[in-house]
Image (cartoon, rainbow, N blue to C red; front, side, top):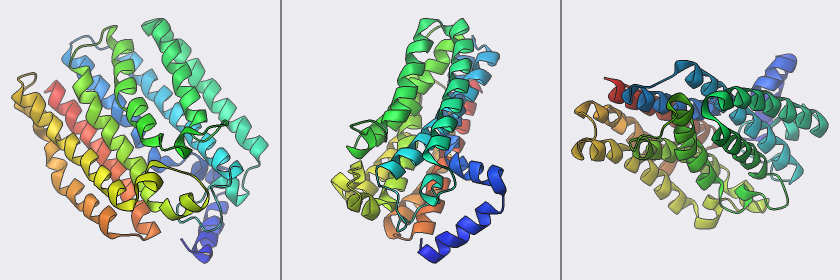
Length: 307
């Protein structure tokens, strides 16, 4: 994004006042990542015929709050670490733009994580002490991703964190509070959700590879290069399409589990876009589209589990 275009985005967003700036800060295009694992968890819980829907709703609220908190922390610490500068090509970052001071951002982060903790306390009533451990792990990962003395995202661990916390950990945790059990099926269905969530971050890091490299932010894509980053994106999409076929062939579930495979044309188009383009706005749209594909995949997987 050129400096002139970025200034226009700043002007347009500022017209929305405090609410508009806050909306930019929470990065709404990334929130589908939080919705997807809860959808799949609801499908597994319904399949097990022991779902408690109130816990699913609270788990969804908690996941969204944790994602917002992670986004705010990422915005603040990338700015403090010097990773967000005027030459970045991604969407506006509110700390770097000067919309909020570091003190205001820390306050916002604290408020969001306190709200998430309150939701976690409610879920603890249903799921017991494991919920406390998972909640502490999630908040710690959200902060340490770009904060602390050794930011995990700056050492190539971002995609692994996203895979774990939006895949197996999120799905298993939600199924646990909804059913007080962990059916064997929960493990294979959590993997594609985590892979597609990691694919969203891969697009982000492919887009930012040049500026991240200059800022000494050694993301996985900076470490392995753009070509292998694109290949890894394709692998994440491909494996997520193959896994439903494995589940059906293995006899675990009916053929309806194959519904996510209808997303093959869309995923193929996204792989081509990410592979062919180095244009910031185009990759921004690819990022948002990958997040939408993730939710669509989760919705189809939910349908495949409950029908």
